[in-house]
Length: 188
View (cartoon, rainbow, N blue to C red):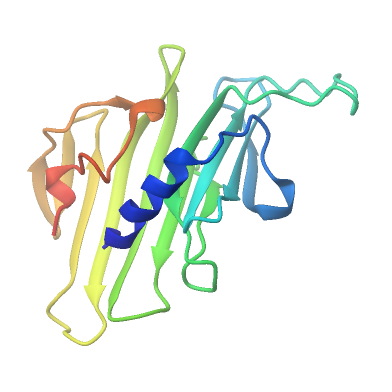
């Protein structure tokens, strides 16, 4: 599903890291509260290598002047795939419970179509990946559809609509890399 994304990750590894996003390449941003009362912001920026980088800013109190830019509490490279056009752009949302949802998709190009949502929460003073939802289908073969919905907090999930036990443990967002170690429950 994201085979060509891995090759672009290698190219990104040799490029310089940035402490501040290139605001001309922002594809999505949300303001949320990981802890009650705090104002946090997540910004998704295309990195030019068919991926998007996540910048998370914590505890934005609104009293800082414009001359003092916020420093990201976390930068996660290549958290989402980006094809650069409609049906292939990543986005950010918040859930009803205040979790950060990182969405990627390829729903407009080619035969292999898919969408994915990574759910991020704040636990024990860390941003962690709490869940993964993935749907994949073949635009030509109607019986080629698969889905998984995993909750790493509870250890429960569904694969193709059937309940399963989730063996993949909870991971810090900083350590998340599904291209190297994809959850086996979502490998189709």
